Amino acid sequence: MAWWMWLLLGLLLAALELATPGGFYLIFFGLSALLIGTLELVGAAGPIWLQWLLFSFLSIALLALFRNPILRVLRPTDLPVDQLIGDIAVAVNDIPPGAVGRAELRGAGWSARNVHSDMLVQGQRCRVQSVDGLMLLIVPE
Image 1: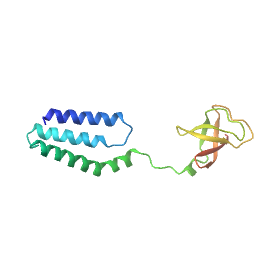
Image 2: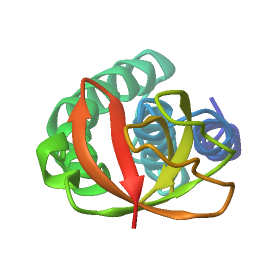
Image 3: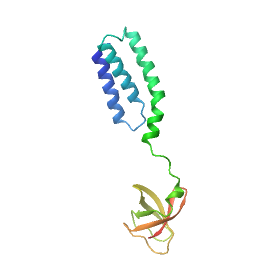
């Protein structure tokens, strides 16, 4: 295969990786295609069957070696929900006493139960009293 076809394939696979929600699979196939294209450009890639064999081997090797370390760096560590107790959330909608509504905490939307006797109004700051599963139990600040 011509060198420019490998480079085009590599760029296409890298672009597809950017367009899909983050699994970090296609990028390694794209990098392998770019490497094979570069080898073909300098005349060191060999016959077409060897190029495809190298492409397959490099793709799998890069995937096995680099995917997990990259994911560990890019994905945040899991935060125990117990560490949310005492944080300040903001009510997304009005939440009557004892009712469930939505609250925003640390940039994410959560289900929240008003465990106080007063109504929580939209935009009101609330303190997380406890966490039940993935539901915040909140009181006015």
